Amino acid sequence: MEYYSNLTDEKLMLLLKEDDHKAYAQIYDRYKFILHAHAVNKLRDREEARDIIQEVFTYLWAKRGQIEFTGSLSGYLYGAVRNAILNKISRKRVHEKYHDSMKVFALQEQVVTDYRVRENLLRESIEREIALLPPKMKAVFIMSRNEYLSHREIAWKLEISEQTVSKQITNALKILKVKLGVAIYLLMIMHL
Image 1 (tube, helix red, strand yellow):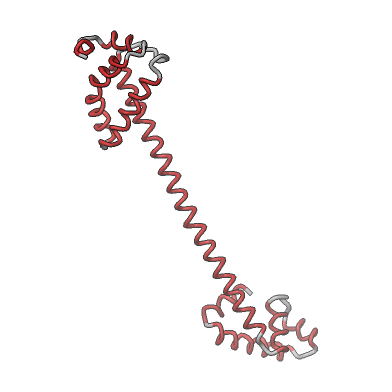
Image 2 (tube, rainbow, N blue to C red; image 1 turned 90 degrees about the horizontal axis):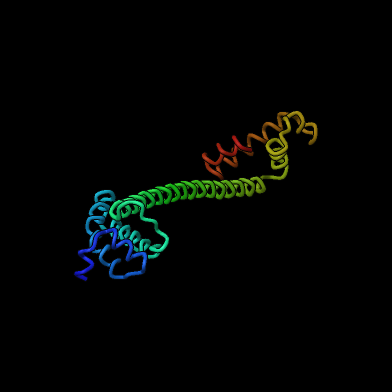
């Protein structure tokens, strides 16, 4: 191995292209610490820097036959580390954006689902209480709130006075207010 430590980078690159494991080991030993320090300086994380260096040297060995060294070996390795760091940062940003968007989506979906469940429960409670009203009062109330008929139209259909219609609706609302509570009563007035 002492022989390889005396070789120039250019000679090591040629030997590497010829599948020389010892030349590869020498390149690794020669540059691993300085490249790691460079990566730590950029990433501020020793483990991530170690992963980057591992990726760069794994790529160097895997593609040793295809890599065209046009400049210096050190320049190539620094460039490879820089590109790997930029790729890692880019992937991390994409991952964070995706994670954040999924959190926002999950929260929105939960709110919408929760709202729909509550709305359905409220609607069922209201319908159940309306069904328990006395028959004539229920008929007047449904015509007023569900069919959107005026007091005059209801009175004409049921052959009763407008005053009776008004009194029936008032009494129905009082009963529902007591049974459903003030908050639900207010929601019902607004949405029915």
